[in-house]
Image 1 (cartoon, helix red, strand yellow):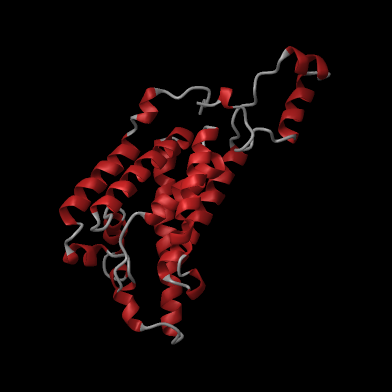
Image 2 (cartoon, one colour; image 1 turned 90 degrees about the vertical axis):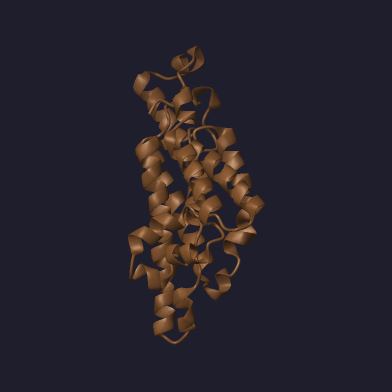
Length: 241
């Protein structure tokens, strides 16, 4: 993907704004409906009965608080737009799906193991667990690691820092939600890093100074690779949209 420009169509991609619109519609319609939330919850009971439907539906329910819902939808739309700009539509969808699925499987799998070992209350099998937090956390982590522009990365890092107390709350007691958050965050970092290593952003065009300093074109290319100046916090934003 050529990161030297940001086509307007990337900002208008159906992935971030389609997600935001679907989330707004579903949350406004069913956000206060306990029966729908209970059916969509990604808890152990639902994972054994209708896992695919629960995994998909849960990501579009933002809770009952209107202001919290609005803030979360706006954040999700912006961060997913950054994700699409860097990775494209299909890879962005694959990334957020990985965050939702792995965050749920690891956290609920750990809970199942703790219940089997007598370390957790069996009633937790039916706990209410809905929302797009695994999707948002993964997207934030991926943009921090490999966002297309420096300001994208700093914006994601600031949002991640603000949400850190919420993301990690209850982690010491192995709560389902914080374990899922940490799993999604780790998944986002690792997958984004892998994408950057496999397909790094283009090196800046050599100037007359670098041309004269390098003995040949190969020497220039190797010097650019070895110093890793393209890594997320260092590449030249003039070359990136």
